[in-house]
Structures are given as structure tokens and as C-alpha cells.
Image (cartoon, rainbow, N blue to C red; front, side):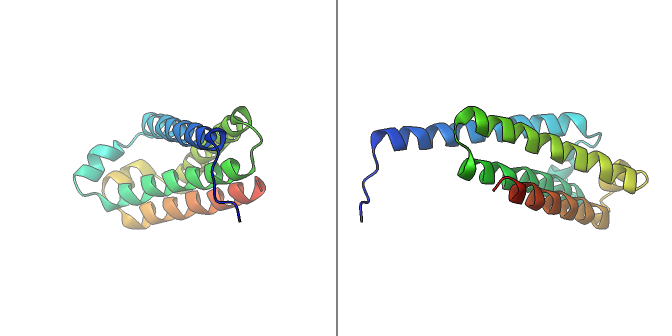
Length: 134
């Protein structure tokens, strides 16, 4: 069994890691900008509901991102699927916000049931999205 990694393989690995982190950072910035709750401020204050909701969205984004890394044929292909994954997670939040009346206020108030529901929806859709990419 050959366990040697070529320089080209290592370089490709570094590119995927770098672009994954850039895409994750961009998703987080976009998500925090679009959602009306100041999630980071709330999380720092100990708001578990916001931590659940935000964490679910991040994981829900990373699942299809990881799947697209495994199945993409190039970095531009990977970036396109990452963009689609981000859009899907934003739509999940917007849809969930319509499902729960005053969701932003509930999350800001620390309603863990709402935070858990948002996390479960984000993870569920993220899993489905990831499976669609394989």
C-alpha cells in the first residue's frame, strides 16, 4: 500500500482547506448579517437558544460543504456547491422564521425550544443537501 502523498496532493488539500475556511467565514458573516438576532452577543451572554440555532446553521452548512469536497471535480465546482449550500441554509432560517411567530424575539429571549427546532431543521436540511451532492 502506497502511503506517500505527493506535493501536488498536499497542495490540493491545502487549497480545499483554505477555501473551506473562507467559505465558512463568509457564510457566518452573511448569516449573522441576515438574521435579526445578534447571535454572537446573545451567545456571549449565555443564550443557549441562540447557540443552538446558530450552531445548527453552521453545521447544516458544513455537512453539504464536506460532501461537496468529497465529490467535486475542481475548486470552482466546490465553490459553486458551497454557495448553493449557503443559500439553502439562509432559506431554512427564513422558512423556520415564518413557522414560528416572533422567532427572533423568542431566540433573543432564550427560548431553547425554538433554538432546538431551528438547529434540527438546519441539520436535517443540511443532511438532505449533503446526500444530494453525493
